[in-house]
Image (cartoon, rainbow, N blue to C red):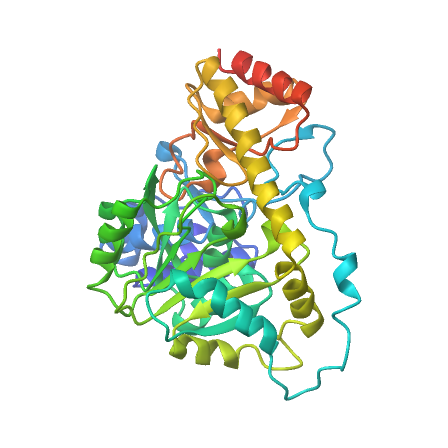
Length: 435
């Protein structure tokens, strides 16, 4: 069957494998020919075949097994956030906010109804537009920006990439990376270029290498990076802006998903002369995942392109939802409850991290909803041992872009909603599992 693979360029070879897979000629588990063998048969340079396999790997269609070869995977999707279906285990890898800390919208609901919005009217509620401008203005280097409302941050990222890129364009992603960003880039047919993340955020060397590789967009989480919890330090932000100053037309997308819950100051990659940018703030972490609404502050040209993809009656965000979000966000009691929720996540995660360190397990809470736990042994081994103790955890493997052949030594845990007794039991079980 592998003899049917054709093509003389990397893109053609990758497309041929895709087509054979879609037709069922190549099935999940099929081992593709070694790169040198395929290059010889097709009469192309070995590097061409390497590039084709790299494109397939970045699209999530194949995985390298080292000496066992490159294999078509069972599924071409990546792991998703949220509760695992059909399990009796206690799921501590969900990434969910605590439902007890999500504000009740009932008191505001009655105030959001009124005159219906009809076709041809502005797609953004004027009052929300004005409120959003005040919210984001202090964190943007220029007053020349526009507000767009989308159905959540993932929707915004998808639309932003679609209006700026074409298939096979390269996108710089943090490594390890937020699951939804990996999924969005792969589904769009773009090439993910990993940029390592450390305690201060994206690394300067990693971003410089990604730009040298020709990325046309950079997706960054300036604070509460998921999964690590890292936030950009002021010094790192200055250095990254200096690198990006030489590439003013590369689209910078900043996903400030934790915004109102974060105690960290906002540091940005967007410099004063940058031409293409978007600062995204979704409400899902503090008003609930079902509030599918995000504010996108972009340069004027990007806003014009987004507007063409948000036409009234088809892809706009309901004005009822916009008014509800505004009613909640402008309510002083709701804002106070959001601050309390942020303090809750920080307190619970910090305490859990301290207890793990007492057992010799390297964990330091920085910010965000989750904990990024470094393990002395393979995360998959720890995960299996915890399953036997009744816990379902998420290993770092699914968040990795650059080291698919190297097993992860990290867990991403969501533990802020555990009772003290359950938290202590999980800590004890993790300590036992790493021995």
